[in-house]
Image (cartoon, rainbow over all chains, first blue to last red):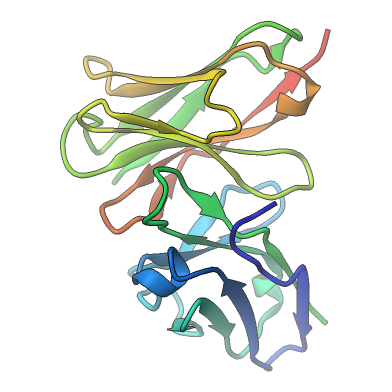
Length: 111
Length: 119
């Protein structure tokens, strides 16, 4: 069982915006700004999309944005495109333990 | 440009040891402030963090695997390796190596290697 909770699935139509949540505790998500998000297409390695809550790697579309409120981090994708259909995982540094966990993953379907 | 490449047997027999190597280019496994990490993913399931080795050689492991896992590095070859003992079918997965930077995010990944545990 993941220490970080994500919805199993979300969906949206092209052009719409969706938000994926990642809920943890004050020891992880709520305790610092080391939250990152990864996109994984079938058969591919995960790809970093957001780091340190809201930073985008160089060259990544600004349709992807991240935020945090309390113990919940969020990934928002605006202007949904078919190519955004993938699985998304969150990850947060945890101060109380010397190991890492991912969220359970969210499957995004573009209708 | 940082690149990581996993290598190792794709088929391991039950009760044997799984051994994988990750070759790094464009960065040094023995310098900087990075953790060099192994992550796995069973087919159709989520990501599972296996463990990591810091540039100093300090290691951390997933508690659920700790008794069976060893991660080491070979600085002369700029590689780090994973050994998982006493494997079972439950260890069948895609195995990825990744760089975990000082901001605690995996910014570079290998393409992954599929390891099947079967007799």
